[in-house]
Length: 285
Length: 306
Picture 1: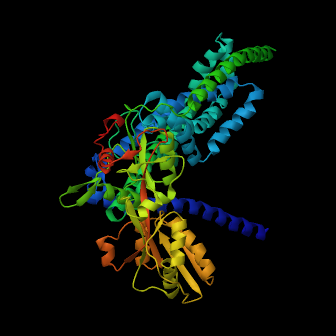
Picture 2: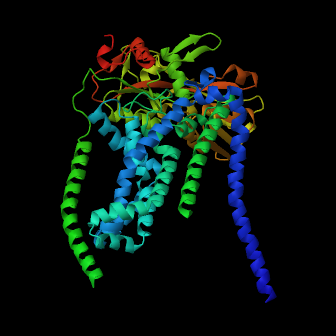
Picture 3: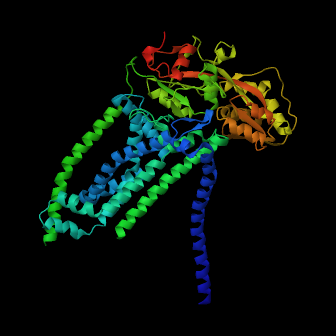
């Protein structure tokens, strides 16, 4: 009896330690980012840094507005392309899909989630870039290309979350709608989907998180020009791309400015997580 | 009972719905892929915009390129400032550079002579082809030295490795790797027979250093050479900090680095090749034209000054 309680205590501590490792990682990253990034922002000037339109490390000009806008545009585009496809796929999977197709389809979507981003990048470089260049003109390395590719990349996240939330809607809702004379489509889009609203929103927000943090694939196809975004068919540099491109060579204030770029990205992710928390709170109420 | 009926009805409807829709969908997918796989344009249109592709700020290759072709402006207080057009696509990787140029008919970029590949076309500069021969005899102007960086306090094994690199045996390796040897006429005799040498730095120099390391193993198997790839700046600073015995750099030392006690020695010459797509009829540029393209003054292929 006693040995059992000791065992339980020991395991209790082991679990606590595991949880602490996780929390420590987050805390250390926060401390590192803030300690290294905030002084740089101070040196450059917060407004010069956040609202500066020019990024020329060679001349000590560090303005990351082009990259902030780049990240926002690319993410918005990915949402415009990915969300409708994702939600409709989820509806199909949950409500229309015959059993025979379901298993291979589910497998394919899971596979889509597991493909490394550098492979997505290569796919974009080989297929989407030439396609955009031949169809719409320009060089092909553009905002549009990045949006399309990121739209693909966020699909598994959106589909997964949306589908499970659609399945969580009680079957009676659907049946009652049918009993009232609504068609199959109408019951789904007017009753089931609105009930699963918060789950769908969660999926979309998670998709935004994935799109804004994506690096490798975007670097390969977006062109990475460090200037204000000029149009759908012109290139763009995102926050993540800015950090990765220049970290290898950066020194002194340039390096600190890149870490400060990381702080901005971190704030974005924080905002996204707050949105998630707000949505969850809305569900509980 | 009714429940079952609904299910049956639903499944019938589903099947009908799916057969038609699936056929339509697969047709759309097929069309998309066919149009995507149609591939490169076979005709080169002179009226299209030039796609300029450059390396990232701080890269040794970019530094050498802008210096050699004069793609900079003089700015008060800063000296020479890289003035590559803001519209240039930036890549931090030779492979992506090669791929972009090989698939985009309107692209122009630059790579190191040692990384040249058949998938793209190398352009002549001022009428001279970019080849090992022409870099060697000095007619091809766009070349840069590869350096090894050391400090005063050099270990005995590191000294031995360097004397191998600069000997005839080492310089032969350099030439067979596709670069131009820097000097000739020195003999190599092993001075120590055991120890460890750490070499680190530029990703452009790393391939040739790997080959040198292999060849060195045959001459002096007792010394263990470790090659770490990073970049020129990291190579120099870790040599100064004593993390590496020998640094590799594809650019000259800065004044700051010289002050801190870094010494550079040329081990090879590398050409910088201007590359264009294989269907691009423009493959002979003057230095002025290249400067204009990379400064962003020449935006279209038909506005190149002939």
